[in-house]
Length: 178
Image 1 (cartoon, rainbow, N blue to C red):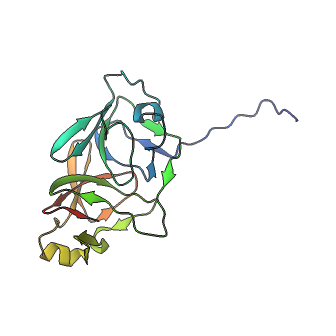
Image 2 (tube, one colour):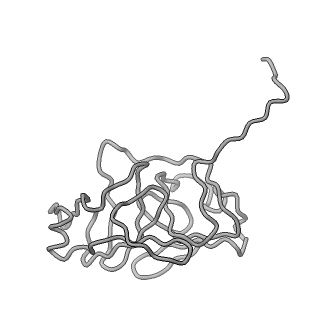
């Protein structure tokens, strides 16, 4: 082949996570990737400045313990580091031709957008024991809380949409799925 010299180019990452502690998610699944979340982000696994945690059934779980070892679809994480962190490796996307189920336990849950597009929280369907509820019916039946809460730079913000790359707290009053 022909070699071309003296050409410089830069590739942008899929996403760059802010350096301050934030709630984050990815619209890609990395559960099948052998790399840890630290490796995907180019951080040493022993770097004490890397903070990564999830929340599972009432308890925080910290890197490198499961589920805070890898990015997973529909799940959110608290993440912080001393510099912004680029993510350049694409994982497995969710099938956009069908809904993606996110299981919620009774209590607070950390969730993320499994898709590359924004989801209107008020249009989310809630499933309990096989019965499908609209968002308003799920609220009326005491299944879930009315809004989501994101976290960036030390502040919580109420939200009514689920955006890619952002993580959210959501309250479930019973075990359900979205």
